[in-house]
Length: 207
Ligand code: SIN
Ligand code: MN
Image (tube, rainbow, N blue to C red; front, side, top):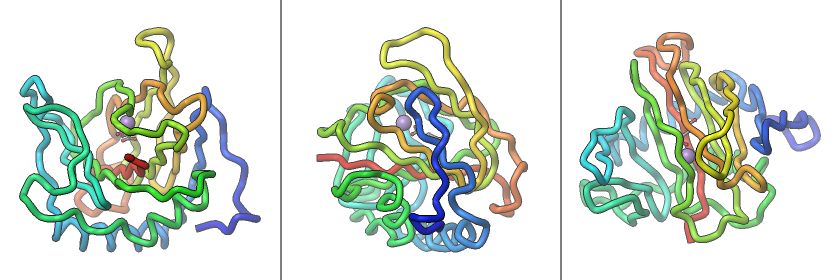
């Protein structure tokens, strides 16, 4: 991870702050190894929307809370759907938050989204948290993903950027409640994950 002095200023896209290549390849490899251990404790599962539609991403989480969705709705839960506690957020992940979030509070959830071939995430707002003064920090690993950014209100023109492995996005301030989503991934575009796919971590203060 770059030290604070060496950190280059982020690109600002509608208030979304993009740190391209924030994690170098060794840091990405180390993070993947940590996540593999974590997913053995809290396996990826297939989430279902409140309307009963299977999501195309697979999910898990770390921290005091995991964000979950099922027929009962969108919410944060202190346990994995399998009943176990979520594992703690790894230090490597907390270090990213501390470097870019700009807040002293620590994240209480690290949502893990895994995108296989054809997976996507529709435009949405992150609004199940209690304190919107804290940003959501996103970390991308593996295949490139086309990240779309819109407005607080529904509709209007959107802007897209391909997020690459190692990129970090801070969604705070003016962008905290803006719609965003992932239209598609370029399956096999990165060598980070031998089987292909994209992992996105989002760090959130929940309470
Ligand atoms: C999300 O908004 O939950 C995920 C964003 C991403 O995958 O880049
Ligand atoms: Mn989101």
